[in-house]
Image (cartoon, rainbow, N blue to C red; front, side):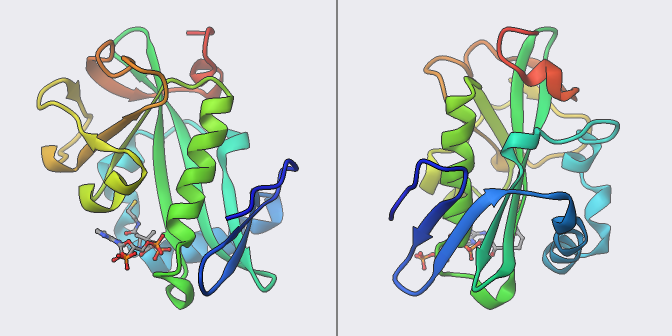
Length: 188
Ligand SMILES: CC(C)(COP(=O)(O)OP(=O)(O)OC[C@H]1O[C@@H](n2cnc3c(N)ncnc32)[C@H](O)[C@@H]1OP(=O)(O)O)[C@@H](O)C(=O)NCCC(=O)NCCS
């Protein structure tokens, strides 16, 4: 894997090179099509979507992956507030085009997003997803009943990764969507 110091990161797996860069306005339609393909049209009914209502993702953490000039992957991170005062990020949605699945694109997008989030001084990332996949980038199950989600979530799929040691211990209570300014460390 090679990482450049510019805003574009090239990640080479055994079979494919992905250029990872910040999402731009012109990507929006292609990203929506990719999410519809990956999750189906019912995706907006999920609890994770409820956390995004009335908010918007953190601009610098909305990334796309391109291969051969085509947009093939997308990841976003959304601002959360846990309890009264603990800011965190929600990872997702993460989607990779069927044509390039299994070639490291999803993991590359997550690694890049988590690196950038850490450099921006975020402390904690949570998500709803399959533990065997997300464990590859350091996520593990949140202790049961520590976080209260605004809708049903299978406890086995509620995962977190600390970007600062001890951050999860201080996070408890209701998880709500927040505005991006609240996700900026030190501004909660
Ligand atoms: C899940 C998804 C993002 C993975 O992207 P990808 O680029 O194919 O993943 P990678 O190539 O980085 O990783 C592939 C590896 O992860 C494994 N993997 C992929 N999805 C997995 C899952 N849900 N559970 C466990 N392992 C999984 C693959 O088996 C593969 O394992 P291997 O390296 O041992 O062969 C992609 O399949 C996708 O868009 N799926 C539909 C949307 C979705 O489910 N998103 C995630 C929930 S938010």
